[in-house]
Length: 192
Image 1 (spheres, rainbow, N blue to C red):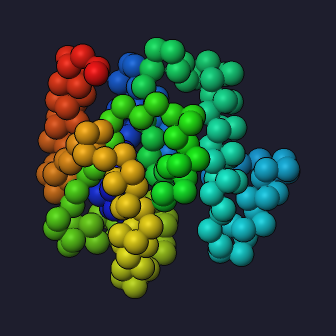
Image 2: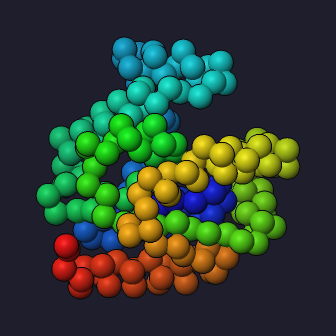
Image 3: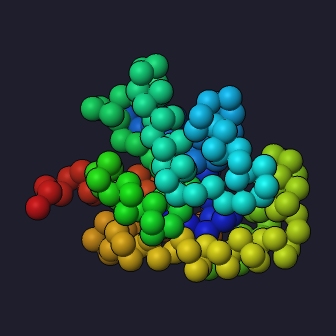
C-alpha cells in the first residue's frame, strides 16, 4: 500500500489482512511493538526519544525482525500468503535495501486528489487514535511535503509496470473493490 498520509493505506492494508492469503504489516505497528530493552530497541529509542527519524538501516532491521518473529510464530506464512506492506519502504534508500529481500508483485498507489479529504481523514484519525499531532494543519502540511519529497520517488523505483493507481477519493469499499479487481487481473496474467 502506497500513498500520502490520509490516503487510506492503513485502512486498506487492515482489510486485506483479514482475507485469507494476505498478511498485513504496518511499519507503525512494528515500531510500537519494539522491545526497547533489546540492542535494536535501544538503537531505535536513541532516535525516537529525541523526535528524530529512525535511520533506514535500523528501520529495515526492525521490520525484518518483526517479520521473522511472525513467521516463527506461524502468524505469517510466506510460502502461501502475500505480504501487504503499509508505511515501508518510506524512501528510496529503504526501497533499495529491501530490493534484495522482497519480491514486490504490486504497488497500490492510493491517490487522493481532493486534499480536503486528506485533512479530514487525518483529523478524524487524530481524535479516534489519539494522534494529537495530526490535528495541527501545519503538521499535516509538513507530513504531506515530506511525502512528496522523500516518499513519492519510490514509485519511480518500482515503475509503472508494478504500480496500480487507485482513486482513494472513493469510499473505502470502492477502493478495496479496485484493489481486488487488480489483484484478480494480475493473478490471471502469466508472468513474463
